[in-house]
Length: 90
Image 1 (cartoon, rainbow, N blue to C red):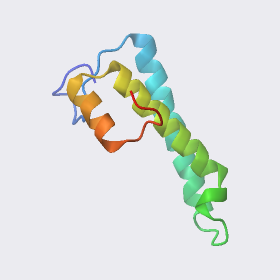
Image 2 (image 1 turned 180 degrees about the horizontal axis):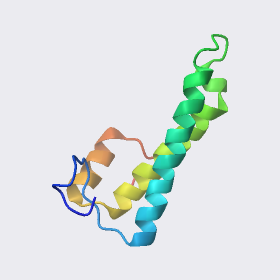
Image 3 (image 1 turned 180 degrees about the vertical axis):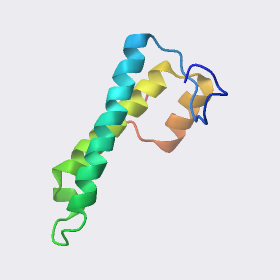
């Protein structure tokens, strides 16, 4: 959102229109993958570590956090560092 009062938010970022579009595409991609995972979750013999939908979701989630880290304010960066989701130290 462009204003902090438009809806609840967790991270403050500054981004161009293109960066916002890319970030929204990542969120849309994960939403689609969530539905695939929902249907796959009802198949009891598939383990998490052997499921490419879970891998795709995880990879996109890391891209989302990477973008938020790059575009975010100090509080966003500190939080993302504290949860340790990004593979390399920043």
